[in-house]
Amino acid sequence: MSNNTGDIPNSERLFNRAQELIPGGVNSPVRAFGSVGGTPRFIKRGQGAYIFDEDEHKYIDYVLSWGPLILGHAHPNVVNALNQTITLGTSFGAPTKQENQLAELVIETVPSIDQIRFVNSGTEACMSAIRLARAHTGRDKIIKFTGNYHGHADLLLVQAGSGVATLGLPDSPGVPKHTTMDTLTVEYNDIEGVRSAFEKYPDDIAGVIMEPIAANMGFVLPETNFLQEVIEICNKYNAVSILDEVMTGFRVAPGGAQERFDLDPDITTLGKVIGGGLPVGAYAGKEEIMAEVAPRGNMYQAGTLSGNPLAMTAGLTTITTLLEDNLFATIEQNTSKLVDGIRQLGAEHNIPVQANSVGTMFGSYFLKEEDMMITNYTTAKRYADTNRFTSYFHKMLQNGVYLAPSPFEAGFVSSEHSAEIIEETLTTIDSVMNEL
Image (cartoon, rainbow, N blue to C red; front, side, top):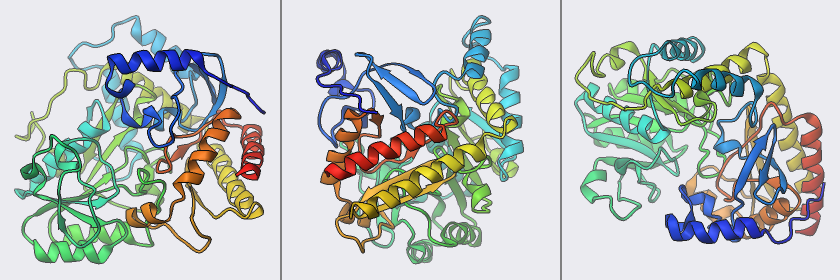
């Protein structure tokens, strides 16, 4: 399936101009190809499992707008529904029927949710969830896990260091130290670290926020019972458990990671799939906690475009199609086929690989040595062979497969990635690994 792109003058021209107009030439950092080098592709259009750049080079897309497009690009159901909605207006700043419909569907599908508030991004959802946890408990401190990403709100831009209950230091200039002084960081999968933090601050911790699958340091699965035990510890200390399902919601199971792992968090954050490719986020949870949110309660949060009819329509149509047509099982099967193939090819080419999938998400690392295992942020940084990934990424791109331009990002499969497309991808991987 060789797609000999050679030079990409249109993308180069556009990127050069973009750097004059936009910081770094991009509106979200990883798009700049900073981890892998080279020129980012400027995408002109997408159809099904494919994207096409400004030079009309065609790629099988495993980024899928970083997860939302579980039905692939420009799915006719979503396009038709948006076409009908947009003729009636794009936003009203007033309640609409679509908000009720999507809320009902999410509440019916995700086990722990009684009520939901829609926002415009995952960052906004997580920021609001933290505020809600603090309002509900009257406490200030928050635990997050090293390597978990919950958006770019000041108090959550802390990933630094392993260790037990390390007082957070900001990862970015412009974030005041006092903003993160109540953010405690614990290594992912370190349940003893969580216990120690609560023992040290038994009356000060408002809650714990966690990715059920650590998909922003690659693809790290929770150890057995880790997530359940975190929730149990929160319950013991009357703290709020926050499950960040912005990525995993409707991706690892129709009811998200909490369905897959049998979890009952207090608050869930959502995004990505629930907007079907349009900007969206949500925080949701137990009624007694959501009752704190204005105007029912006193915790203030608002947004001009929150619940706008276009995002609600795209999300409603996406999830309805996914559930009614029973597509999820097929996507999951094809995702497993891809990951099984990556493992097998790594073994055949004597290249150490760690690859996993859950539902319709997957991730893989090249390892520096065969016996290494990545289980948290520290081991991801220590054991991942980033140089080999860079070579792999560019060779895959040259052969028509578009992967996330970073060794520490998850991948996604859609209903449009047929068994034949998966097999075509594995053929390409075989060829590329033979060159590595």
